[in-house]
Image (cartoon, rainbow over all chains, first blue to last red):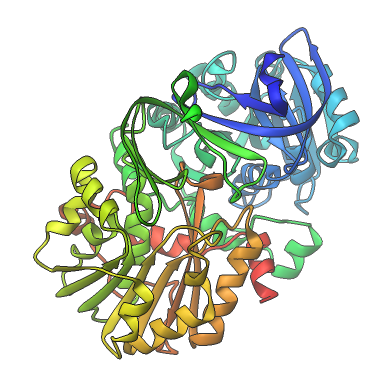
Length: 289
Length: 289
C-alpha cells in the first residue's frame, strides 16, 4: 500500500514502459485479494470511483463510457440483426449496460470468472454494475474458455472485455481462443476484443490482428481515446464470419434522438467511421501482418 | 530539481487536475531560465528527447508527429491554394518542418518570442528544428501580437502553435488575438490553433470555439491523440473567412505514395475526416456555445 503515499495512486505498467499515470485519491474504498487477483476500489478527487485489478486501472467513472460504448456498438452496429450476444469478462458490468441498449438484442449472456469483482462493483460502482440487473442479461460465473467449449453456433456477437495482452489475459489474444469464439458464433457472427495500445505496444496490437485475420474472412482495426488507459488510447480488433462485412461503415445507424434516449455519451455513426481511420504508422504496422 | 528523484520527471499540471504523467529519464540535457520561461531538455528512457517549458511537456520525439502534422495539414488541406503561411509560436520547429512539405506553400513566416527555445531545439532536437533550415522559411524573433498588427491581408493560413489556455498563453485564445489573425488573413484565409484538452478542460475547449465562431463564418472543431499531452489528447479550432469551407472534407488529397514521400507518419485523408468526428459529449458541449 506504499503507492498511496501523499494521497496519489500510481500505476506502474509495462503497457507503456517508462511512463506512469498517477491519480489523486480521496480514499481507498476497498482492497482485497480474491482467488484470481488483487482488487482495489478507489474514490478519486477528480475522476470518480476507480476499479484497479493487479495494480492496473480497469475503469474510472470519468471516462469508462468511451471504452464501454465503443467495444459494444462497433460490433453490434456492423451486424444486420444481433439478437444473442456473449460478453466474456467485463466484471464491472459496463459492457452489459451498453449491449442491452441495442433494440434488436434479446439475450445477453455474460461469463466472468471472478465473482468478487462482480459483487464489489455492485457495491461500489453501481453506475456500471447496473448492467447486471437488466432482464436481458444472464450472468455465468465461470471460465470463459470452458464456457465457450459448450456453446456451438450460438451467438451473433461475442465481445471480449478482458485485461491487457500481457500477464494472465494473454490466452484471450491467441489462436485457440479465437477458434473457440469462431465455433461459438452463428454463421454470420462477429467478434470484438480490445487490442492493446497501438502507440506503445504496436507489436501486441499487430499480433492480435494477425490472429484475427487468420481466422475471420473480414476484419476491422479500430481505436478510441480513453484518458486513463495507457497512452490515453485503446485498440480494438473485430472479425466477421460474413466476408461481406465492412466494419468501417455501420449498418445500423441511430439518430441523434435515439442516441440521447439511449444515454450514449460517446458513440455515434461518425465516431464509428472515425475509429477505423488509422494514422499512417498504424496502417504501416498492420500491413506487415 | 527535486522532481528528478529516482530518475523520473513528473508533470503536475492544471490541464488535467488530480492526474499526472511521469516519464523515466536518462539525463537532463539542459536547464535554464530564459527571459520568458523555464526551459528543460530531457533524454528519456523510452520516448526520446523531450522539451519542457515551465514544467509542462511541449513535445517528445516519440509522439510529436501527431500534433505537428495535424495542426499543419488540417488547415492546409482545407485551403484551395495555400501559398503564404504564418506560424505563431512553434519554437521547436516541428510545425515549420510540416508546413514546408505542402507543395503549394511558397513562403512560411514564423514569429516566436523566445530565441533561446529556438537555439536549444536546434542543438538538442534537430529532428524538429530541421524546420528552421528550409529555404521556404523566414523566422522572426518577436512577439506574435505586435508582429501581426503590422501584417494586413497577408496570409492564406495562420497556425498558432502555443502553450495551453491557462497561464501566459491565455491571450492567444481570446477575441483580440482572433481579430488580429482575421485582419492578417487574405480574403479566403484560414486559421488553426490548438484548443486545449476536450476531455478534462471542456470549458476551455468550448470557450475558444465560441471566440472563433464569433469571428469566422466557417468553423471546425477537431482533436487528435498525443499520448504525452494531458489525457492523451489535444483539440484544435479552425476558422475560415470563406463561408463555403467545409473543414470535415479535405480539398487537397494526398495519395499514399505522396504521403510516404512527405514522410507523413500520422496524417491522411481518413484521419482528417476522423479528427472532426466528435463524440456526443463534445458535440453537446459545443452546442451550448
